[in-house]
Length: 317
Image (cartoon, rainbow, N blue to C red; front, side):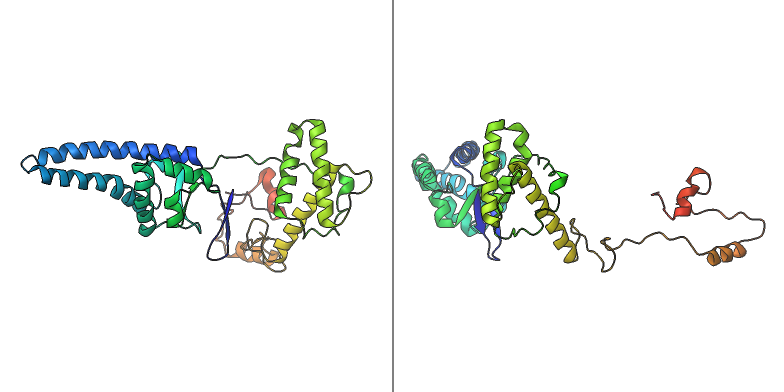
């Protein structure tokens, strides 16, 4: 995983593409380019049969450069970094700050790529990609670009087991501000997968994570509390604090706005109230004599659902 920082100081976590996937994408692009070049050459030979040999050679060289250099540049510019091979392999070319590439980036990548991929049969590109920490070739280095994986495997989020009831609220005074996000992620991954681990391996991992978490918080693990239960209790306390902080900032945990003094109800929520007796008498008097007042369409008129009407609850239509 690579962390890119945008111009607005926003960290983006992207997974750089490695040599095997990039090599496969390049082979697919070259195969398409060769097919296009062969078809174009046959058409040009038939069209320039009346020209002299020098003119035919010039046209052949121009078509070769146009297809193998101009083609990739045009495709990457118009598709914002997604050639046919990259689309098939789930890759994309982006800038160093994570933004889409432009013509100048594609021009530098295509010009240098012709030298390090076509003329040297990919030897220079392979060496540069293996040496680079993010798998970049020389064209990426000079253009300021990076090839990343656009399609990521879907990983199902496991269920974090709740701590024992006798640990609820026991760590409400623990300072969690010094715990890094990487440690939280490791603790969460352990809690979601601890049932799949070997008991001895899981116990050793829980003890190590608990000691790291206790060192960050400055509060040792209580005597007699299992390490896994301690981790679950601390994670639950962190989640509870995040919920309280979200509500205090005027948003619910789901991101909806909360009105002041509405007991945490989202904005736009209007409770259903029963009309007052005076209003009901006025409505009945205003109705024509002998006519039957129809109940509203969204409310039950009689029967067993009358209990819902008396309680003020309106079922959905």
